[in-house]
Image (cartoon, helix red, strand yellow):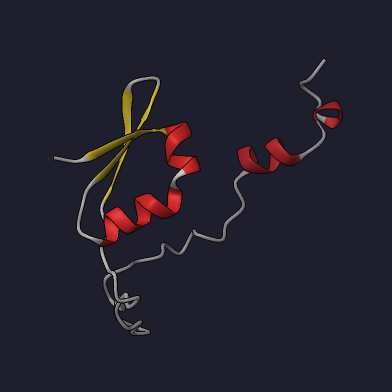
Length: 87
């Protein structure tokens, strides 16, 4: 059965919850009585696997239009008072 704490209690007892998760327990966080998160420690030895540069080569495709300007996005960053259609 998971350990359940309110957000306020979880903030106050963070190190205790980390110890519970490190021991293999599931910790649930609630806000106003509703479950908002469930935590389970994935790796307790500090290793998260080795990074392999190029591991996704050929699996990710960036379209040729990636760097093209998008007028809608540019308009979002411009001063609205300088736009002809704003009043």
